Length: 144
Image (cartoon, rainbow, N blue to C red; front, side, top):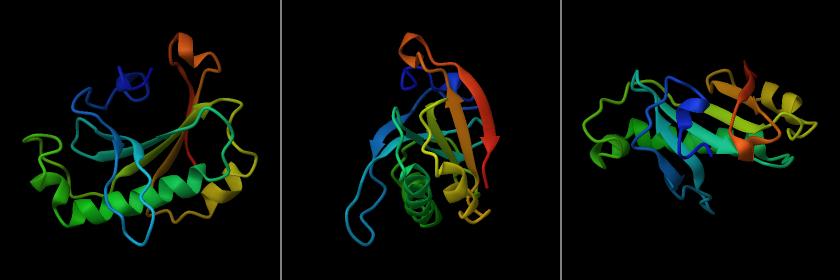
């Protein structure tokens, strides 16, 4: 499971602290939690959204979570809350990692991903179908 070793996804990610089901804010309505909020070794925040089945909302959720996390980061809330201890968080917007088994991305994923502004760096991580036996990244691509 990725929560136990997020470096299986990206060796540049810190193992801890890792925030699961993080709720950055409730701006404009319902607040759904981000699956994982992580920090890379270079100090850049990463929003990780995991899916095990096809979900048309995957890309849009990632973009929304980026927006809410970026508001929190810009206002200094993440640093003040010491979510990552004394680690310096870089003055750069978070990255978005959208993760699903290879054959479980919705057919509209690519079309929707291309509609997201390039300001939001969105990456698709195709993982092995038998991920419960151990996560392996099959392919990683920037999608917008």
